[in-house]
Length: 158
Image (cartoon, rainbow, N blue to C red):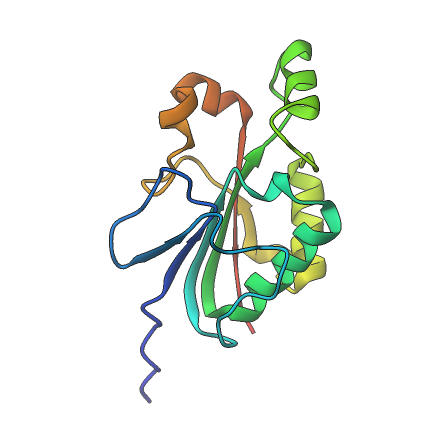
């Protein structure tokens, strides 16, 4: 029995200056994550979004998670990096909440429950460390990034 070849599409949304090399497809302001994504069902191997999801409302973020689930191929990976308050000093917590244009603040529990509601199974959601594709640390420094960034991966299994 042969398996279907995996999709070549590696999709990064909200890339800013962190443009990943081919085969990645990078979008920033040219892709509105509050709208349906222009990709067919089961057509993308990886969806990666770093320090962007917090800039849309909770309901819009949830709709985006459902869209990511829809476009991911079976066994496709969804990687989300967002600010998290838990390890930050009080003054920095307030800064993350009030400044930078954030409309939502996530913690692992909220993010994982939203991913489950979007279709991902709880056994396929986990925290991760920094990966090669991540670039936010280059902007704020490794130490600050370690303190403020929550990294979560969810794998689509049907």
